[in-house]
Length: 233
Image (cartoon, rainbow, N blue to C red; front, side, top):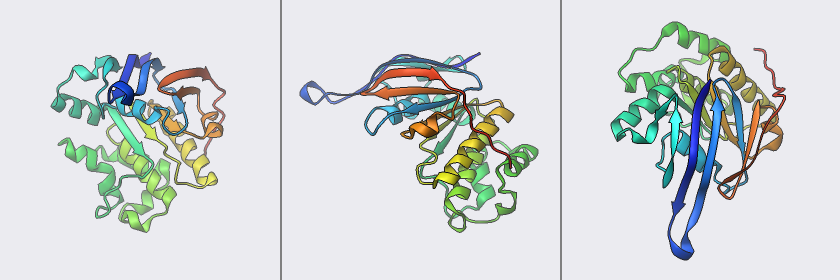
């Protein structure tokens, strides 16, 4: 089933000779449960695209439908609520709150939404990601790989339809990179979520189910792979 679709998505900055086409007519469709890598060099438009898919920025023109909803027809409050409940975000810099412990960081999106966390579900996520024994630690007491696991847990806690990951392994060594990607795939399969990952790492992208190449704001290639990554805790 189709979970996300864009049509003729454009994002322009400036005008005249200073016009920059960050996205220039991007149309794509992603099925529920896919693990998709969006690949491109710096300045290709891949991060801009991710921000549009997540409703973090508005397009110049075009549409984004998530779970059948045209997200840019929502007002700001409606979009914030929709994003908080339907879309999880994993960032390269983790974006953890340094004064909150691991558990508090993970359940923060639920608390901001005025909802109580599903404790069994949180426990399942903690166990799967191997951080159940770290719940009382502050982010500064964790390794980079452990912080990224916390960021993944936080993205999953609201049971979103889609998880968007922006260079989620960019600050990690090769072994931890493979591990984190394996965890993303495992959580996606277990919790029936669609995961879209931005990366400049072609080898990493080949371990996903599908690879979309973007260059100068346009999709230049889109193909399925064998998605050969695996992980066992």
